[in-house]
Length: 158
Image (cartoon, rainbow, N blue to C red; front, side, top):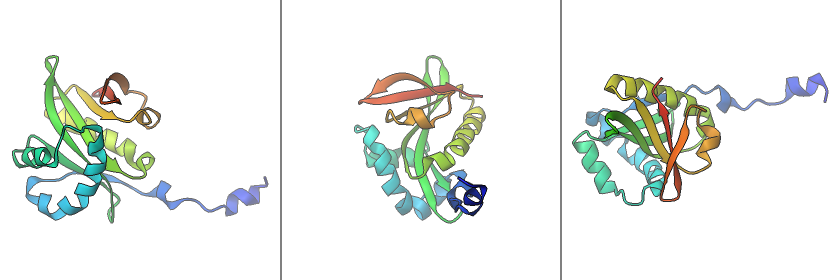
């Protein structure tokens, strides 16, 4: 192919989109809830024992946190976190992740979880997801188990 082909070839603008990962304050849940629920329901297929009532109860008592990935005008993804004790240390568990174009925002999400984990005194970040996540997640994640036919991915906080 000629150099002209590369110079005139359209570039996908998604690759230049800046994503922000935001923890939704409890006081603001009502404003974003209707947008987050469809995405969370997609992600909740990984944890069939979890119900939306469980999520609402966890958000109400603040044992669960709602996060949004946004490009400023649209919500690209939503997920939940909780902070749990495991093997004598705190772990940030990320779950119910649903969204689109994960390759575009996953790096920023990983950075945000690292910041959150450090702030909360957690030593590890964990998530459960389809086997395909192994192609998208940073290499620092290791598969540490399986739950309901899905991989458990985990890494140390940087």
